[in-house]
Image (cartoon, rainbow, N blue to C red; front, side, top):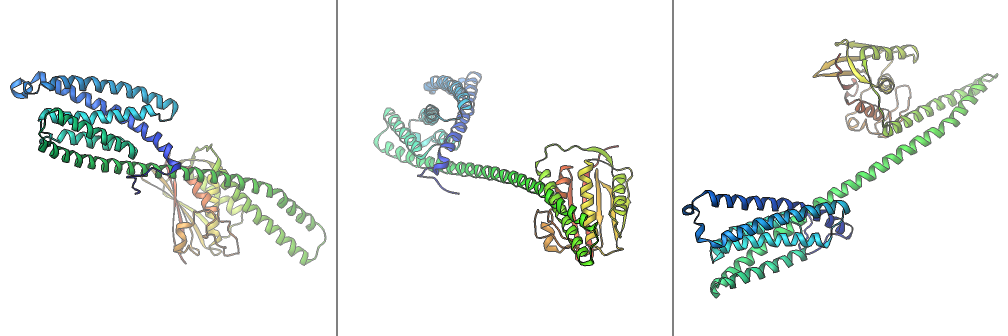
Length: 444
C-alpha cells in the first residue's frame, strides 16, 4: 500500500478522489452528529432519572450548559450536513464550503472531547479518555489532505493551550499536559494519514478495475462487431467459388480437374464452417434477447441423433441412455441444437469408426444432467483448462483430418451458460472424453 503521509495523490486521481471523500465525509458528519445528539440526549435523560447523590451533577456546573450546547450544535450540524449532501448529489462536485464544514465539525468534536476532559478534572492529563476518543473517531471517520490535517492539529493545540491557561494550570503541569497533547496529536496525524492512504489505495484500485472492465467491454464489443462484419462479407465470395466449382462439374472434365474441384469444394465447406462459428460467437456476445421454451429433453436429443444418422451419415453408433423420462428444461431450440451438434460432432471427430457414442440423461439435485461420452483419443491433461477458451491452442485435427476453428467449445459454453447451466469435461488420453451439461430442471 502506498503511503501518503506528506504527499498528494497522483494528478489524474486527485480531484476525483477529493470529490469522493468529500461525499463520504459529509455522510460521516451526518451519522456522527446523530450519534453525538443521541448520546447527549441519553446523558440528559440519565441526569433527570437518577438522583443527584448518584450522578453528583452538582459538582459539575459546567455540565448542564455544555450538554444543552452539545445537543443544539449536533442538531445544527445534522441539518447542514443534509443540505450539503443534497447539493453534492445535484452537482457531483466538492466545494470549499463542504470541506470547511467537515473541518469545523471535526474540530468541534475534538474540542468537545477536550473540554469534557477539563470538566472531569482541571488536570486533563489524568482524564484523557474523551479527548483520545474524539481524536481517534475523527481520524477514522473523516479524510483530509495532509495540509488540512496539519492545520487541524495546530488549531487543536492552540485551543488546548488556551484551556490550560484558562484553568490556571501551574507551569509544571502545563508542560506535562502539553507533552501528552503533542503525543496524542502525533498519533492522530499518523492514524489520519494511514486511513487516508488505505482509503485512497482502495479507491484507486476500484477505479482502475472499473476502467479496465470498460476497456475489456469495449474491446469485446469491437471484436464481436469485427468478427460479424468480416464473416458476413466473406460469405458471398466463398459462395461464388463454390457455385463456380459446381458449374464446372457439369462439364466433361478429367480426373485431375475433378480432384481440384473436390479440393475447392472441401475448402469452401471448411471456410463456411469457420464463418458460421465466427458469426455464432459474435451473436452470442451481442444478443440481448434469449428466448427459451419448456422442452422435453429425451425427445430433443433423439431428434438430434436421428439427424446425425440420416443427414450427416454418422457411421458410429449413437444412442441415448435415459434414467429420467420425461425430463423438462427451458431450452432455446436453435442454440441448444448447436450445442448437441458440436459435442456429438467432436465425439465423432476423435473416435474411430464403429465406436460407440453414448448420451446419458439423468437428474440430480433438481438439475438435469446430460453427458456425452466417447471412447476416442481423449484430451491431454494440460489442455483441459483451456478447451472452452476462444482461439485457444486446444483445437486439434480430427482422425480424418478435420480442422478445428478453436471456437466450437467456447460457443457451447456461452450457450449453456445462457441457459443458466454449466458444462464440465472429464477426459483421459486413449480412453475418451465425457462432456457433462448441468441444466436447471423445469417442473412438469
